Length: 378
Image (cartoon, rainbow, N blue to C red; front, side):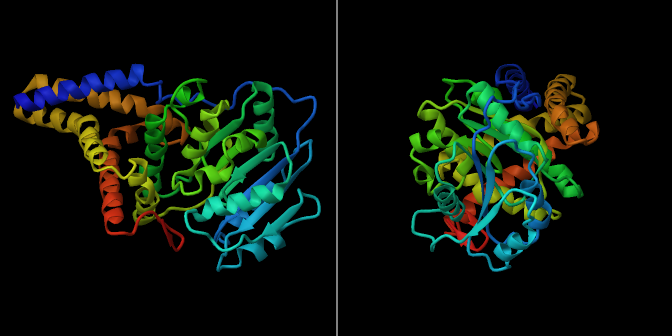
């Protein structure tokens, strides 16, 4: 029990540091910065890489085409050799009143490229000399003013990359358990405040919705500079920031993911396909992550319950305090996703699932399966 007491005290100290000194990662107040309409609205090309997206396009693409943007804008959907008629469906969804749409198919995927980034490169080339590029996924639904708000934020604050974390779907029990924690863990790994601070080493973006100044993208080496990245959004942010660009990342209010993940197996694949890549395929980092997750997320409830049933008040108090602090930092994210506060007590269980997903990601990599997505393995 003495060992458990020390572990619970260390975990409590860790949570005090995370809550107060880790970029206030748990807060959800990083929304689009103050902005005003620019004197001149720059030209924008919206590039949508799409592979087998016929299921979600009827929900997401109409919103993009109906953007209320005062300047010139058009949509380029790059059909990445889909087998479900994605390109033809996109053409049928186009309307005469909305933004112009063009559908293109890139050449065959060359070695060293991920499919999404190869499609993005093709779309960026087709966009021509526009001032901004909105890189957005095919499963992302935008509100009617989304593009105008992004551009106004970039112009008003002289930002080179403005990215919003789309609000993911939380319709099923598994989605409600896994999704809010997914964004919470991402913010813990890349505190938004630190990423948004010029000169700070932290850099992150959300690949589903990233508005980038074309000049900044070219200065960073273009899409080719990150061509093999599985976690392309973070790689893009690092490339732009490392070449002097100013970046911003926050939570979205009118950008939503419409892709359903109703079963645990689908959510598991979403996380595990890139978790080990996030650790740079390093066994020492994997070991440290497993131990860290155990100490920070699993020790508090274990020590609280063990101390309570064993009649060790010091152990129960330290573990309970760490558990309460953990749950308290999770509450803002639960409110953002309109979930009940009591769900915060389940965060240790969710963290345990993420621990297993991370280990599974490493196992799949060691078996040669790597980051598998839509019929491709990287």
